[in-house]
Amino acid sequence: VAYLDYERCQCHSEENRNAILYTLLSQNLNHKWGSHSPSQQRCLCQKRRTVCLQTPQVTCQAASDVLVKTVSFMKNLPSFQLLPWGDQLLLLNSCWAPLFILGLVQEMVTFEVMETPAPSMLKRILLDGQSKRQEPERTQPTLAGVQRLQCCLNTFWSLDLSPKEYAYLKGAILFNPDVPGLRASLYIESLQREAQRALREVLVPLHPEDQGRFARILLIASTLRSIPPALITDLFFRPIIGNWMLVCDLYIKCSKLFFF
Figure 1 (cartoon, rainbow, N blue to C red):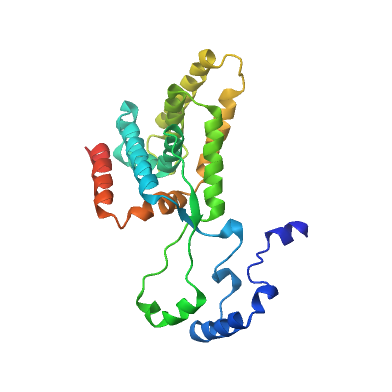
Figure 2 (figure 1 turned 135 degrees about the vertical axis):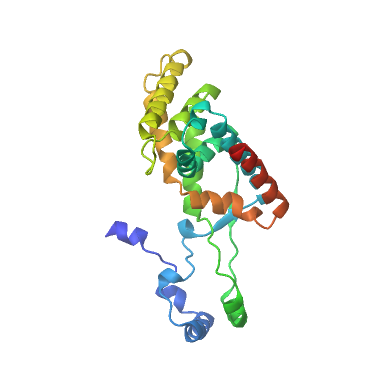
């Protein structure tokens, strides 16, 4: 019971519905748009609040550089180039997000977020006549999602990985034989084992007294896939969509790396 009380959203409790203005505007909105369930209304719980970058220009540029380096890493691996073209695309689609996060860690990219300002209920009413002509509202990252991402980054930073550890760990993440549809899954599995073996071997001279470091690295690396790619896209790349020069530059750089 206590757990359910903690999880239950308090944004639309009876206390929040006592204000006269809230009541009048809610009735107006419900009359115009039909009744809305609490799940369809804006949630004010701290964990569910939508957020955006405080310094989008600086952070998005840094993220774009990391994305280019991520694609470059994959393209420059001879063993990756030997794979069938379809398998390359499947691995790229499946692994770009965890590799990108690992790139954020390696490049020490830090960022801060702030709450996304929401239009007032009065503004929604005044703009109701235009709502049908407007595009659907874009999704925004939640505070909970961003905090999970930052926690993942902080955990990796605490490991203080060396450049060789980063390289072999990226290989172990990229060559994932469990991706559906792979034609050369057995060969990809052997590449993953090779990368893991190289990672284990490089730990011996670097951390001779830390016997559990290899298992700890792989365990923490498994959490990378808990970060949805949509969160990364919405947080780091959606803010630059309006900046066509930056978007075109990023597209050209990634295309040259991967397709040529």
